[in-house]
Length: 235
Image (cartoon, rainbow, N blue to C red; front, top):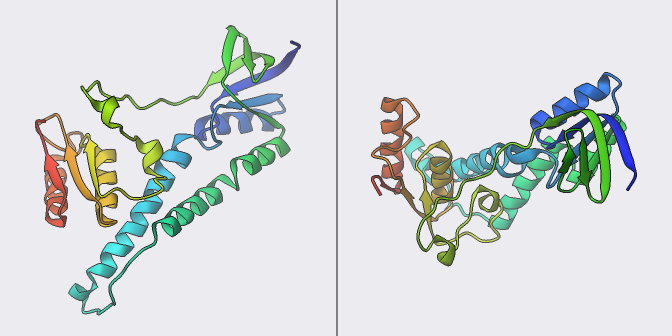
């Protein structure tokens, strides 16, 4: 297969990779941006943006349901989960600048060629992707990282989800166990609980939120327990 030459190849179209590609293109370099999933990376598609949008909606629901403490009498609040997901997806599109395909077209207008597929190194300066061979004097690897699924007997048999599936569940479960009481686990715990899911957080260490300020972490855990979340440590 013919080798296409570039000044720069960037693997990963998340925030870092897209910024690097745009900066190089603005400097007049011939750039290709390679992505195996969706443009925007983890933060836009499976992390910060969808979770913060869901948290905002869950917080609105919680405040309406507890409005009487402020002297407000509001009829019982309800929600439509499909509409919630639709709003989250619209928020993602606004940040991305459209669908993943529309974002790719926008990058192309900046002189960045976007290719979707799994990049494989052929040599220190050569890659293959989607049946094409590419080469460049400089290659940036901006792939981020992946979730590490703990080795737990029976986990694969019962099934599990990660943040990737959690931000777009087609239906809400009745109960949810969250393995890990760090910031991300507690974030998901509160938002799903406020949407009516019975949530249990399971943490291996003696304390939850062990990387946070202890006094603030303890206050938050008390607040979440009072909301009705079940928090278990040393498990």
